[in-house]
Structures are given as structure tokens and as C-alpha cells.
View (tube, rainbow, N blue to C red):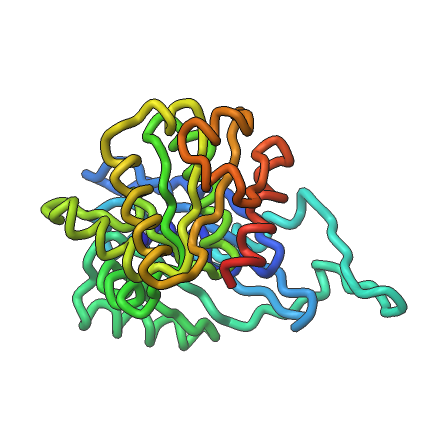
Length: 280
């Protein structure tokens, strides 16, 4: 399941985003750092705002404070000038974009319905349409997003390879089964992994020396997806080669060496683009 922070990071990636932290101080409360983003949609000639509140104990005054400081977020663009437009069209400057009035709050803290309604009405009086997204929103949304690809990898390749692939595909609206996104405390590991392997449309296989030397979960996952291919008579494996030679792949699995893969040396953006094209 994707976290609320991951939804905040991945939502609205189709438009230009300018992000900065907002530091807020309250009496008898620790300093609060709110992640604020200004979204610039040149196609729609519009701009809007989203903010992430990371703490689980956010005072109501913090939400009010951000609503009162929207001008600070708009001032993000004072440091940079952007013009955009298609060939043959007149360029549109970021300063010309109209504020839609829409503001999205992503809050890890639970906000009582009465407090939210009070916030919403006060915002509306100032021409702001407030939308609050909390942990329940993330939970319900994740239920509707069936993963399309399973990311099979050795844990030592997580930081450099697996996580960038998972994040990149998610940003392209391609949900994935990835342990950091999909496993929660208390989940039965075997059942969760087997469910992902059975339901996903494709399996991204991160082939590295670490992977070849792992005879634990990665080997079991590879055997399971290979068995699924034999039973369903379909190709599910999408190999990503990370610093390995064809001879090494052949030694691990002769049939896998005959499978067209993509080399990580092409760069993560190109690898993600090629994977996305096949998965979607």
C-alpha cells in the first residue's frame, strides 16, 4: 500500500511543481515543517497548491496558518521565471496563470469532521476550496489501485535500483508491488508476496550479482514467476541488467539469458520509460 507521503509526492506530476518547506512555530509545540508545493498547469492556464503535514499531532492552528500564508507559497515563483507553450503558440508566463482556488492538504494527523468543516467554510469565505486528504484517503485509494508490476530484487539493490524504478513507474500512474509500498506491519510475508506475484501483470526482475548470490526470497520469487509463465503460457518477466554479463545470466538460468532485457547503464529514466511502455 502506498503511503500518504507517496501520494503527495506522486500526485500532480504531470504539471510543473515548485516546492519548498514552510517552517511554523506555535506556543508549547515543537517547530512544524510543512512541505508546500505550487502546481503550474500551463495547458489549463491554472495554478493550485498542495501541502503535506508530516506530524501525527498537528494543531488546528497549523492548518489555519498555512491558509493565511498562501501568498508565501505564491512567492515561490519570485525566484524563477518560467514560460511555456507548444510550437506555434504564444508562450504563457507563470505569472499569468490563474489561481483556481484549490488547495490540497495531505495530513498524517487525524482531523475531526467538525474541525475540517470549520476549516473548509473559513477557507471558502476567502475564495479557497480546501480538500483534506488523510491516512484513510490513502488506505481507500490504495484498494482501488491493483499493482501492474511486481519488483523482484535483492535488498542490497533497493536504494540504487529498485526504489527509483518503483517511484518512477508510480509517477507514471503505473502502480507496482514493491515491498516498501506494499507490506505493512503485521502482514504475512509469504502470503503478501505470493498474492503480488499471482496478480501482477508483469514482474520486473533486477538482475545483479547480489541477486544471483541470493538463494532466499529472490530465488523463491523468481521460481514462482517462472512457474506462472509455464502454467499460463505467457511472458511476465522484464529483466533489468545491473552490471552483469550474459554469461552470468546464463549460469543462473539459461532460459533467462534468451529474454530481451534493459540495461541499467542506459540511465534510470530510459529504463523506466521502456518498462512503462511494456507494462501499460
